[in-house]
Length: 224
Image (cartoon, rainbow, N blue to C red):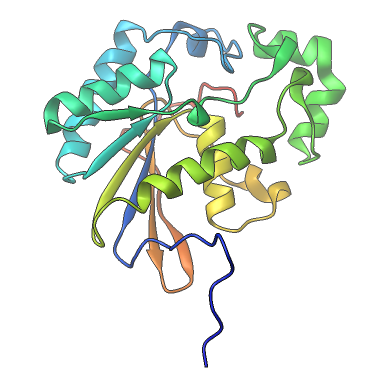
């Protein structure tokens, strides 16, 4: 006799469902290598163009739903896809980028100069509150349930597009793949407006594509 599911257990999305985790387009702070975190920075003209180009590619995959961070760089990126597909974007602050306290607004070089030991420990995979902010596991704790909740609502063979941020996407993928948090760094970063694709098989979520969608470009973001 099969044991009943634990109380509160979520129904897993059925076979054939896909998750497309799409990073927002370029911002001025990306170009300056300035840590954005939860700071609400808008897209550059280049970023808008990236979003429009990527949206045309993603629209061809016939997504069933779009959920996005409420920060304007992700919201604007999501809007480009919504205009092509006719879908309504659901915004959720649980998909925001990692809050990084005093690191936010600093350039990469400034972070290394002022917080070098902390930065090195983070790169080694140690649980570090960058700038006094969130742990990566805490980001996954808030973001992964948002993705799974919306995945449950799409058809058995449906596609959900999640528009978020480089660091948040990395931690979410790591959590959904069941990787230990110290190994999340092994997932390379996403270039602006690129995406990763997860599909669910018999043993859970699998990474089908990573950093897809454009010619190779440097990764300019908070997670490098």
